[in-house]
Length: 230
Image 1 (cartoon, rainbow, N blue to C red):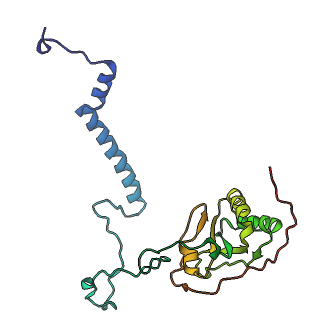
Image 2 (cartoon, rainbow, N blue to C red; image 1 turned 90 degrees about the horizontal axis):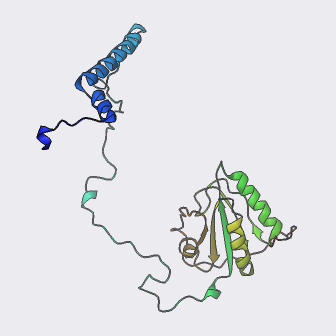
Image 3 (cartoon, one colour; image 1 turned 45 degrees about the horizontal axis):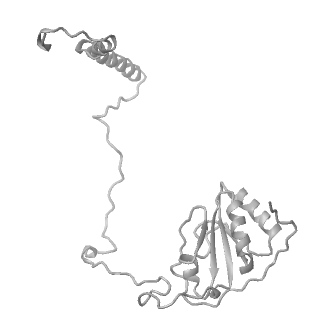
């Protein structure tokens, strides 16, 4: 027999969905919802509160400012200039030779923290100065230099690099740490020669000088705890 002459029975599950979505059922559910909404609105009206419906809602916005733009009205016509490159060695095209690694005289480690992670910063700071001879700086509770958040730092000599970097990777406690070398180009040191432990963050170093005297490191801490090894 063809499908036209055959009666197809719904399964129990299909029948339940058919009953649920039937016009009579939908009308009943809608009317029940409107009744509940009416009772709620009636309670609100009885309490003296205004009833706000989607159609009557109007956002409150501040009045427009009165005056003229300090930028004038011709900025849209300005061309898009290409900024001058500040990448080290590329000011006049690609460099002809690599820089010697001996241009690095020392390193800085900058530790960033906030009001939620300052206890971690204090602990990492304590652990570090107990184990390594470094030049420890002050706590900076406000942005200082190119660093845009609270931070502290210490400087260390090149011989500590293969020890301190893996030690900080394992003992950062999740803090963001900027490691940069000290060369005669502090702008590039902070922007292009960097190493990061965990997530990087913005560094406002574009205004730093390109050429400067290389910063020297004078350790002011003495280790008091033997470095752990496995």
